[in-house]
Length: 346
Image 1 (tube, rainbow, N blue to C red):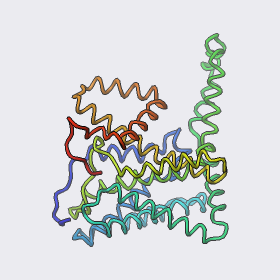
Image 2 (image 1 turned 90 degrees about the horizontal axis):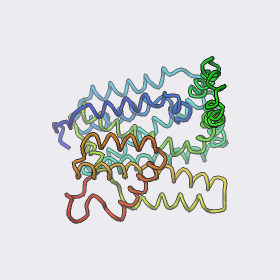
Image 3 (image 1 turned 135 degrees about the vertical axis):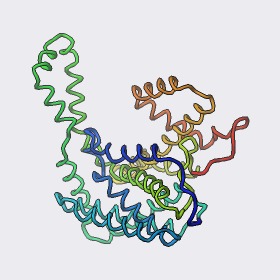
Image 4 (image 1 turned 180 degrees about the horizontal axis):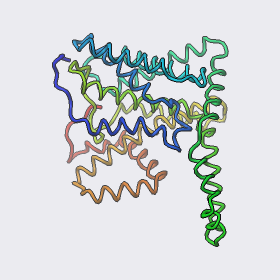
């Protein structure tokens, strides 16, 4: 792209997404299951890679040097609590950023962001896998480091709940007839919150991949707002989000591996594929829903009520959006006869 290409739209939505990405991993329910706890690492290193590629495309050299220095400083000054897991986090962040930079450098300007991000993620996984296989004991050491780190993380949700249960007000409420009948439910929630970190460990590969894609999207959006050297088209609207329909085979492969009576690593691989591609199709389904709401000129109160209903019925809503996104592979809801413009790019 030309070095003097105009910057894309406003900052409000991007900064809101960035704030959510940085703050959500610190919330009580997420802090114990987020693969990369220091989320800024992923964004800053990916942004540094973008600025380096942009420098070669006619961008400002000082911008690239500033972000590279910031990335190095951020990785260097982090406190070392558990060195093995910290090394894994740093290595993944650097490897992901380098892969994304290579993909951006070698991709045609017309290639949308999402295929670049998926290619960079696949390259990162491939390189990390080869390094793990080539290093004796690396796989077991990595798994032990993950379990050790998760076990040492503070579980604020459990701490808050158990502190609340010891308060006089809670004890008085528990002694009432209503409190007695609901006490078992409270204990069940306590048990779920306490076991959540251990239950999430098998899904760390998929969670790490999803967290990495989100970081790359934020870095891409930020780069095209601070630099005039374009690497490609800016991020499209959620209502237009779609991807190659062949990715449905990833979800199908996950289901097959999960259902096969092999167990062990193959079953775990299937669960991670189901989570990863299921999340992508859920976002695609959300894009279809937003498109329908826009097409129907839905008023703000209707959207708020729908959001509240989706929050209350979170699990069914997620499944429904995933099925809607998966159905879009064959039905192409947004571009059926009678209502569509040309296919969007993502």
